[in-house]
Each structure stands twice: as structure tokens, then as C-alpha cells.
Image 1 (cartoon, rainbow, N blue to C red):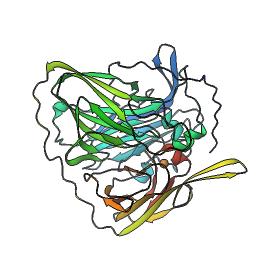
Image 2 (image 1 turned 90 degrees about the horizontal axis):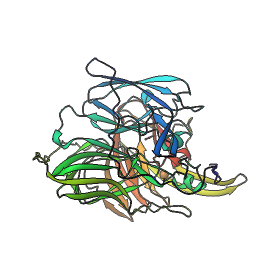
Image 3 (image 1 turned 180 degrees about the vertical axis):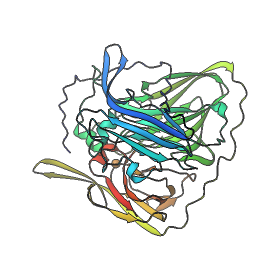
Image 4 (image 1 turned 90 degrees about the vertical axis):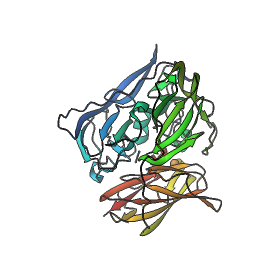
Length: 465
Ligand code: C2O
Ligand code: CU
């Protein structure tokens, strides 16, 4: 919990260029020639981004880029990815966020990869596992800093048969954010950053500020939105285009759902179809969302334009309609066990200064403690109770879950749609109930995905036997 306010970087904020053409994420090449095998290498190391002339930012990248290369595999594939940790003096891991991988391949904090060493992660992608996953480090006490400095990438698992017309394309947009001093360097964390999670001044889309795309009018485009920021809640709306939600973290919904705006909390993903029905300019903008803030300096989060689409006068070729039904989702059966997890924040002065606690059921994370034991294959009901002053996005490793109820001020409501998710926001004062089943044995983490809160202890471990 030590932070320092005295950065060596110059004060003030850098100005980043906007409106450059959107760069597609570089694709991680498959080195295997055997069908059904995806084999590659990811190296984490220092890199430099040049946002503008004279504005060079030291970051961490996977294979030199941030976000890291886009991984695309198909359900049924076997994956073998060798991770080379070339981060100076720091352990790291690769955690396959949301993916149904064995516990010993999950890159959790119990399994660090020392600096200068390599390790290969291997796992099979089961049938039915198509979804929008991601990858990022998860070394004990290092996750927040390494992710913030640039280590995050998208991992898309495609279905064998896709109900969405291929003419809609499939564009991944990874949102990250950074605070930059005037010389482009990243200022050190302040105490406020640790309490609230570090929120940058610039929201980047695939590493660019407000990039632009040109499409003919009448275009329907499929997007996958990733919130890969440490702590920024993105409430988003398009001005000049219509959004339809078709999928969540763990893949497609049963049916499309039209949305005026969406809330993407840290680590969440959404799949959307965006219709550009009239020529002109469509922009993706942030709306205000109060997720709770401790201390002074809550950042302004409304009115930022993250992404611009220039819709040309030329009409698009006619495209097939979006199907009414996407795929069936069966509700997980009656739970055999119920568990309750209570989030609290504590503040206390002691001899060494201010002590902050971000706790689950009154305890901070301890690597050597098993918090709960669960049975593989058994459905459980988890009740996440947020008694804290901030929203906390809750994430469980190793499986996808189904949110069945939200409760607030004694009033319960069902979510707008049934979906597979691995991260759900639990708003201040809210209780979220979810059904989940872990199918593979081993230790699994569950935690708040405001990564500074994870670091300060808002994490636990379930041992699946
Ligand atoms: Cu995205 Cu435990 O993490
Ligand atoms: Cu939190």
C-alpha cells in the first residue's frame, strides 16, 4: 500500500494526435502446420511507443506491441504458446482470462515465470468455447503495473459454424488508458491511484487515440469491445449509428438485443453489430457513470470521443440480415451449494501510515490460504454482496458463469438477457447472484478486476477437487 506522489516526470498532460486511420491489431501467426494446432511464442519485454514526434513512451509489450497481438483460434483447437518473460527483474505469467484451461495452465499467481525464463502453456479449446477472451499477466503484486504498462491482448476463439454473416467483418477494439506526462513518460502511482485504481487521461483504442474508420453507408459491422483498462468504467453510446448486442465474454447471446448505451466495466467484453444507416459522421462517446470514487479528483468520464467512423455517401453492397436466433443457452441447473462473498473497504491509521484494506469476507488475499473448496462438476450459486463505496467488477477464473439476479435496496431484478460471462460489475450497495460450475480441478482465483484492488487483497482462491 505504499504510493508516492512525487513522480520525477514533468507535470501536465501530453497531447496525443487523433483521427489517424484505425490500425487492425497485428495477428499472432500460427507456427504450426498441423491442422487443429495453434503454436506460437509471446515475449513480454520493454518497448517504446511513439505517439507523436518527440513523444516517446516506455511501455511493456507482447512481441513489441501494446495491445499485444490478436490471437485467433477455432473451438476444438489445441493451443501451445511459449511465453518468454524478458521483463527486467520481474516475474510475470500469462493468464488466459475467461478461458476454460486447466488450473496449472492458467498463469495464476501461484505459478510465476521468473525473469529471463520461458514456459509453454498448453490447453485444448473445447467445442462450444467460442468467445472473446483475453490474455494478461497475473504475477503476485505485479499484475496492475504490468497490465497498465501495456501487457494485454485479445484472444478470440471462433466457432466452427458462425451464425453472423461474414460480410459484417469482425473487428476487435481493445480499450486501454494511460496518463502521460508532457514528455510522454508514465507518472508514478499516487495514493489515489491505488485506492481508486489507476485511471489514465487518454483512452486508447488498439493503442490509438480516437482513431478513424471509413465505411459505406448501409454497412453493418461486427465489433468486439474489450475493456482492458485497470480501472476505468466505460459507459458508451454511438452518436449516428445503432448498436445491437450479440455476445458477451463467453460468446453469443441467444438473440440480438438493441442497446442505446452499454456499460463495459474493467475486464468485460461485448460483441456488437453496429449499423451505419446514414452518410456523415458517427462517433463512439463516453457517458457519465459514477462508479464511486474515494478522495478528491474524480476524473471526468463523460463526453470523450473514443472512435470516429466516417460514413461515406457510397452505399454498401446489400448485406444479409442479422439472424433472430444466435444460439441456445441452457440455464445451469439447480445449485448444490450456495456461497456468499462480501466486499468491503477499510481505512485505518497505524504506525506506518494509512492502511487500506480491500477485502472479501473480511480477509485480504493470502497465497497460502485456500478460501473455499468446491467440487468439480457441481453447480453453485454465488452471491456477491458489495458493501463498499465503489463498484467492484467481480471475475472468476477457469469457467464462465450466468448472472441470474441483481438486488438493490431490497428489490431484485433479472438481467436483460441470459449470457455467459466471466466478469460482472457489482455496483455499490448491490448484490449479484450467479450460477457457476467448475469442471476442472485445481486452484482458481476470484477477484475484483480493478487491478489495484486485486493487488491490495480483494482476491480469494477456490480449490476445485
Ligand atoms: Cu483478468 Cu485474475 O484476471
Ligand atoms: Cu475493486
